[in-house]
Every structure is written in structure tokens, then in C-alpha cells.
Length: 171
Image (cartoon, rainbow, N blue to C red; front, side, top):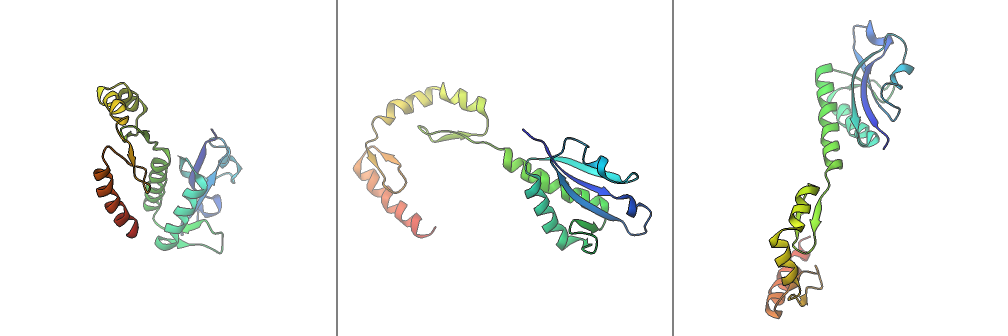
């Protein structure tokens, strides 16, 4: 797996200016190799692992255009603003997207049970409840043609289909 990063840097050209201008960037280069390519005297203020640096950078720039002063005369990813807020916003966006991208659901199709942890799923598979559901699943002979849910009786299926059709109308 290739590691990706989002970063914020104060380039050497702006270290002595009265106006702090920060560059937001992304890289797929290993650890700090990308930063070695900046001019000597540039200051790396923040960098963080990202699961999708392109998507993260896009979201960061979208927010920063509204919240900070974009310095388009220098480049599309240059901004002026309070560095503490800039770093906090980068951290919040990257953390949010990393969490969303790394959460995996383990789902038991027999019991309709789900969890984000593999070990909990494995424990469920060996549980009494799961084994009972396997035995009961043989009794389900009536299937909803809309959502594939199974029912033991025709009357149970009939009641469900009325609700299922109503749900389809509003989605």
C-alpha cells in the first residue's frame, strides 16, 4: 500500500514577509522526500497521512476558498490566514475522510447482523443465535420481490409488500 500525505508548508520566499502565505499540498512520495525538493529555509508546518490525498486536498481547498484568502496570483493552493486555524481545518478534514474510508462493515447475510470488527463477526458466526437462525432460515419460503426479504407465511409477506411499496414511492 502506498502512503499518501497532505501537508502545509511555509516556503522560504514567505518566511520573512509580513504576510504569512501557506501552501497546501499533497504527495505520494515516501515520508519527507517531497519536502526536500522545496527551497532551503522553507518550513514544513504540518503533514499527515491520508487515505486519498487527492480527495482530501480537493475538500481542503474548497473549504479554504470560503474561509481564508486564496492567493491565486501565486497558485491555486496558496492561502493567507491564521496558521493554527489552517492546521486545525486540515487535520479535521483529513481525519474525517480517513475514518470514513477505513471503516469496513462485516455483515452476516443470514441474521442481518453487522459490525465493523472482524473478531466480533467471527464470534457471531460461532454463536448460538447464528446457529438458530441457520435452522430457522430453512422455514422462510416466501420472498419479497422488491427487497428480497424472506417470510415464513404468505400473510407476513403480504403485509411487508404493502410497506415496501410505500417506501419505494418516497425514495
